[in-house]
Amino acid sequence: MTTTLIEAPRDDLIRMVATVPEFRASDDPGDDRLGTLYGHFAVFDEWTTIDSWWEGKFRERIAPGAFAKTISENRGSIKVLYDHGYDPTLGNKPLGPLEELKEDTIGGYYEVRLIDTDYNRDFVVPALQADLLGASFRFRIIKDEWTEPDDDSNELPERVIKELQLYELGPVTFPAYQAASAGIRNRQHAELWRSLDDEGRHELVRLMKQADGAATPIGAGTPTPDEPGAPHSQVSKAVLAQRARRIQTLTKEMLA
Image 1 (tube, rainbow, N blue to C red):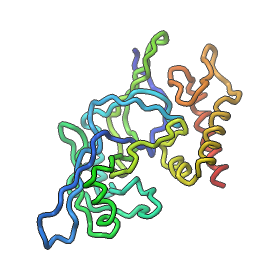
Image 2 (image 1 turned 135 degrees about the horizontal axis):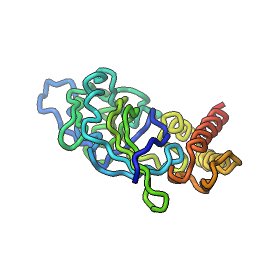
Image 3 (image 1 turned 30 degrees about the vertical axis):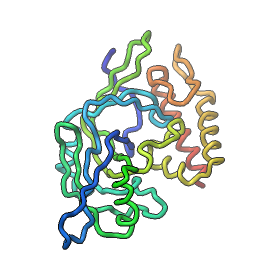
Image 4 (image 1 turned 60 degrees about the vertical axis):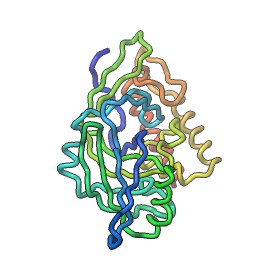
């Protein structure tokens, strides 16, 4: 494998974590907040396969230290929301202030004192207590390193995220968007996806597949990808850029 630079979306990315957020009730009867939401929103040095239309297909891990700068410089702007602020009832209402945000030996750790609101009391707290929620975070990649496999191997490209800017984190009902082939790892496309009914979602996937199969200038010897999420090693940078532009155009047309 060789270290190289592979183009892929870098901003407004969403990742789930396998760890379930935990809830600690307040033991102070005079406390005007409900308790503490806590856990790890990211885990270091665990390989995850990313397989989406928007980003492509590759393996990824987060290196220790990736959150150090954003925690130091951007902590005041990092929000804690339910379902990334997409929930039609809660919207982008904050769950509470970040009281702890740091890196430890496991990954990114957080503690949030939940404010006493009806949406926290009636939904978020019971869902946490019943272990019904997962966790996710939204970010922008600042520094990364790609390793591309040899041409004759069946391995995926690998990306190590060395620095990122954290925008938002919090509990989610579905820790991963269910239509990875439609590229639902980008904020704009997530909003579009959630606005459609089942028929509209099927149509969007069909249009994306059709657009990706359209005639495009492809470098000599580079096969045309025949399904969403084809490995970056099989697609030229020009094709990746054209694919991104086509998806953006389709999104604007469907939102118009």
